[in-house]
Length: 92
Image 1 (cartoon, rainbow, N blue to C red):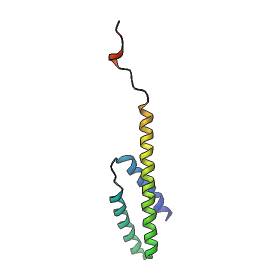
Image 2 (tube, helix red, strand yellow; image 1 turned 180 degrees about the horizontal axis):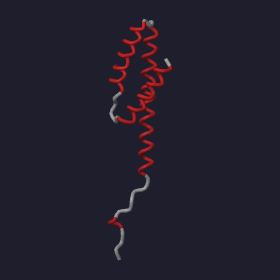
Image 3 (cartoon, rainbow, N blue to C red; image 1 turned 90 degrees about the vertical axis):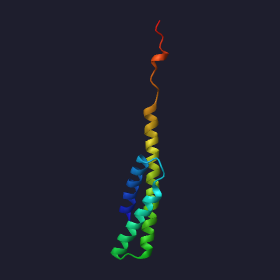
Image 4 (cartoon, helix red, strand yellow; image 1 turned 45 degrees about the vertical axis):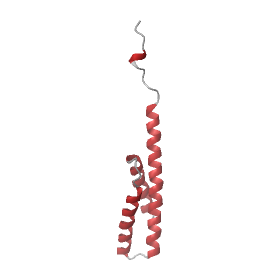
């Protein structure tokens, strides 16, 4: 379960840093399908599958949010002061 949470956070932060559109619903559906198929193949109980999917979805959203915030903070730090324009310099 902790492996699912850690990888969900990492995948979510990558998605949040890369995509500006809301990309989470397709990834949650795809991840839920993969997790449920894998857990059913291993013979896990249905309650365990549902809890795993809930942990996956919530950790993915948290990672997405943190990744998006990190990109915004880094971008605003690089903007800083604007360079002086050549048009504003006096030639005389």
